[in-house]
Length: 472
Image (cartoon, rainbow, N blue to C red):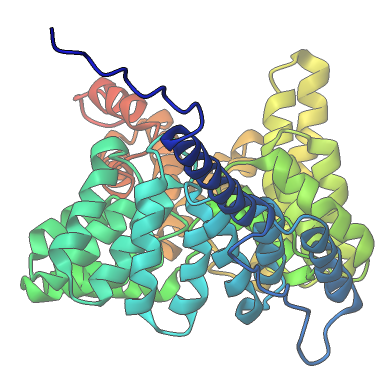
């Protein structure tokens, strides 16, 4: 029988010990890497910028320092870095904002505002090519539900248009129009793009939608003049050219992201600009909250109480609005706009009171007389001011002086034929007086001038109801 050799006993710590040691070494290395990654950061944040510039207001320096102190306390906070960048932008220190927003984007890459804010200074410097990547990232990170998403996308479209990248620009504009067909900025940009593509009819279609917009009506009128000239409509071209010359300068587009950082401004000009933007967007309570402190801080400036009065009037706070407008008049009695807005406020307050019985009608009559006086003061300063003529005409109408009222409303339309509201008010009075053919003409012109107005359906109904019989 062959002997079977006894197997060698296994050493409890042979190869197993070496494997264990190797495993322990790997654990130590992994732990070291984790420490290096999280305890010793691989990225060294930039040094927070300081306020630099000639003749900086002490309030600006203090505001920047407060934001810088927060960054030093919270160097890994995207909102601390982004907030500091916003303070720089809000106070016109664009050059210092770039590193702040770059660091904010690194820490919070999903937030569209940090890359969007990096584009602004580049656009202001004329470097549109460098701005495009930032705008593209902002668009990618914006949801269509975000307040401000349309403004981000349309700024990208406008930049691409300027660079001659028409197809890309058109895609961005179409994206907005598909979701917001009445957006003034999208329609204006679509009109501009059609002009660049030599498509005059498409340009007219889009630009006509902008004629009632305080943000685009002057520029749209100028472009419509050019489009009409190209298509051989000489009379239309002359009308739109004259209209563009008469209209006030367009207001800046409302941009919710820009308004966000303007809240951080301590500069008077930028705070007033924010209040105007909020008012133009219909955010009257926010506009009031922004402009009211300026009336106390700058008691010799008529502009803050003028804007405050306008906003309060639009909120139907007639006593507050009247008080603010009268303060503006005490500071600057020769400002035509203030006299007009006071006339309009007094008229609207009187119109409301006139519905409240006999006592209300008596009080309303006094207000209509005051409104007449204010409108005449405005017209003494600017005789061709169409809206002051409208306020005069409406006040005279309520005072029973219909012949004078109709003459004032007709003159308003002659002075400013580009405004739908003037045609509408004249048409209403003509219809009341049985002058149906002329009323029809002005109702139709009001509809042409305001293709997106909320009152279109009502005006169409009134047109349909106008008698066909001969006028009295």
